[in-house]
Length: 116
Length: 116
Image (cartoon, rainbow over all chains, first blue to last red):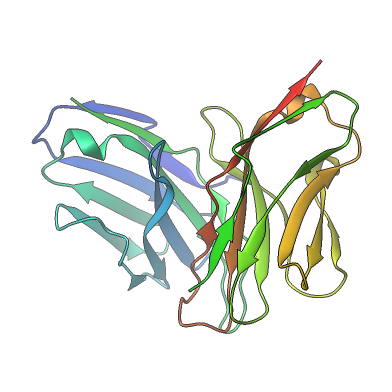
């Protein structure tokens, strides 16, 4: 079975440029999570979707960040304009959640973003 | 609010010796608890979880964890460490009774170093 797929695996860009990170969740999963990992702040939840609908975006750092999930098999996280402090590893995770229950989140390999 | 603490930044153990990675949590209801492992330049991999039932949970790669409600702990253990167990370990908690939805709160991680 294919796990969570993220692209690109590495991205190097210059300050001010637009960056788009992509994620394909595990087939059949109905929830998708975007995380950011840095040495200083550890693992932070940015936003999560359930059935393609954003449920909680309280972790999105500012308006420069936006996320979409146009269908059950694809999500994007966009940073525009990018800044050096956005440099981090961005993870996507997916799970299957029913009301009143929770299930394991499965993580993708991450995208290492470097903003110069 | 739900929270989780991993009091040790690093744990050092000799190969063949037992290992323990500590985790304590704070939730208002009955917690869902998870352990994940992260190898260098990889995403987080699920190890085990406690939802309900037996307090001793067995997971992947010979790891187990014991849920202790009175001490609000969920320590990760393995009877005999391997050098290949060296990695970063994360504890995570979800409070199913709260309005936090399906969010997991992760600890800051504990680096396990197993020396030959």
